[in-house]
Length: 107
Image (cartoon, rainbow, N blue to C red):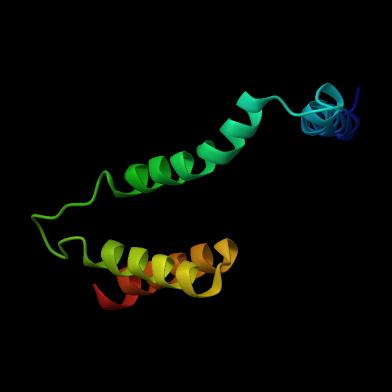
């Protein structure tokens, strides 16, 4: 099998697996969603966001310059934009932009 054909088969298999995994809950819970699945759908997103925040801030050095100021300002930008616009994509992109601007140009 040639390299392009091998790559095409790999992409097709990965796409098929992804589609199957995305549609499987709809097929399995066609009639009614179980209570525990609804509960997990309600509590997991905030828990995952909290874990991502902790993971992102775990290596911040608060005892050496710039003392975590870029991270604090970027995090504040994310929180304020999310409270104002309620748009996760905008909040994350703006927070990333603020952080990169601060790290590259200011600190």
